[in-house]
Image (cartoon, protein in one colour):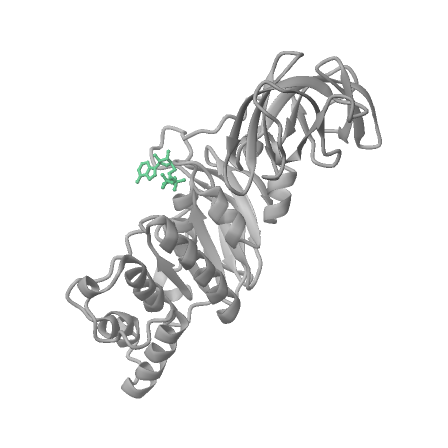
Length: 367
Ligand code: ATP
């Protein structure tokens, strides 16, 4: 349908130098589901509004299929960009029926009535609203209202759909269902979806690519599995769910790999972060599900610790383990595991699931 190329895009609202968005470079492929993810105030909505054409960038360009639609000097207006937009608050008109709401964009475009009827029926079918054509918003659930808003955007057959936290007003169960529906909708229509959320699980579940942002800057851009398992920096590691940080030191480095001595007692191997060398202090990051607990005597190497808390969560068990060497860490295991609070354990790590960062790096989550 359409690709979007963002180059060196910046925007400041205040003129005091505080940038809401700083030199963003991003290529959004045709037919992709791409999510802009980050904490409140990181610049997601600013990026989406720039893509939609609601304002001029201070620097940089946005091109759709190679054609520049936004620059400092010139912005193609929103209605001429082949884009639809869906907002958090649905914004459906209270006095218009489903059909009247959905047909609106076609009336503006003066689409002949028979063709408009076909397109409305098709759009309503896409979002599973067939049969509810004559209902008013007051006669629809929150999820159905959000689907009306989706149909209103889809009916004009956009190449690109921009969605700004469209599920955040729905209750948890409905959100889950709409998530699946959105993903299916994107696959069925082939429309390029650009989606904004601060919810990392939503981003992981929906996206082909995630752009993690913080403080107006892009932190990492990649597929969900890579963002989760190979965070580019501490901020990304921290933002994508719980992660343990333990101190260590690089003892040798070669060919992009390094040996790290964790807590002065456990050697580990990991990818060598750019700019670090032998002797540097590091923080080793490992997610709770990648920590392995064993009984003393059963493990050949590891750190000694004691279970300080055991929490049964249905599909998994979460342990807080205090290491003999000092720090504590969170561990998640299969619900069949049976360590008791107070029990001594040996802690080791999935060897491929360790990330290493310069100690005390300061990419904090801003918001
Ligand atoms: P949220 O998840 O809370 O919507 P966001 O990531 O979408 O946040 P933006 O709305 O893009 O963030 O805001 C980025 C920065 O720009 C923030 O510091 C915000 O305060 C500022 N900002 C946004 N809109 C304006 C405005 N109209 N005038 C001045 N500052 C603004």
